[in-house]
Length: 319
Image (cartoon, rainbow, N blue to C red; front, side):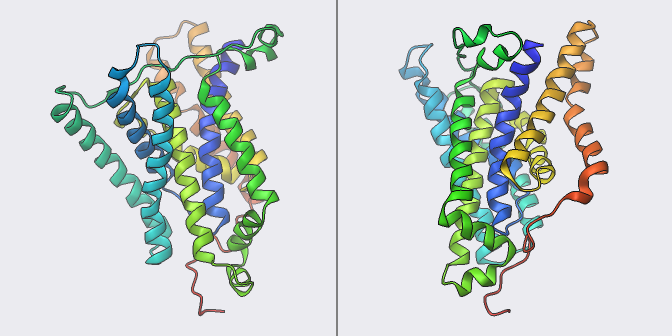
């Protein structure tokens, strides 16, 4: 049971912070299917920064890890500017823009990883090896039956994500920017009439989605895969989109969706190990979050209420 909770949280929290990024973008009115590409590019920049400086520190040093997180956030933010440029400046179809950005991210990072490994590090490899980050255990609290697992084997990124999520919630619901952001997704013309720059509000929202997705990407790279490679593009971004939709574009219900997906995944792995099933069943377990997504879609999609101006190209001259 403890293992289900520990592994479930380490998967759910990166998914959650990426979903929050999607909420910011879509609450502003910009459809963001590019989360998958944003988390991959963010992870690429973070991993590249980590392997570039790792030789300057001791093997057990955590400095490369935190540098990787910083560069992942910056990389995701910078790459999100492409989506913002296409959707806000050039008024491109937002769905097509997201899909193109995902495809470009997959091809570009795969090529650059191989090229940099060969030309800079002299290694014929298609991945940046990172290893698994250190984990923390809180004495006392970790001894509580069942719930103590929440305080055991904690990845540092889990703490960072929780702090970032609290800040994101506060900005969304307790600040003037958050109010303007939510209004842009429902009635951008009213926001414009109030003297607020709709394009600027949306640009910042898309950049936030890029930064948070980059944080999620490097978290996956340091936990699930222990490296950066093209295998990071396995649909986590789309799962985050499903989570925010089932959470009705609100932060706390979205957390519930992500926890459900995470515990479905970790529970499946635990079942495979407990029943001593062949290793091939572990690959089948990876589909569980997506199966849960389909079931939720069947039963709850009719209750979803998206922002009214989501996906609509804002034309200042149109009333």
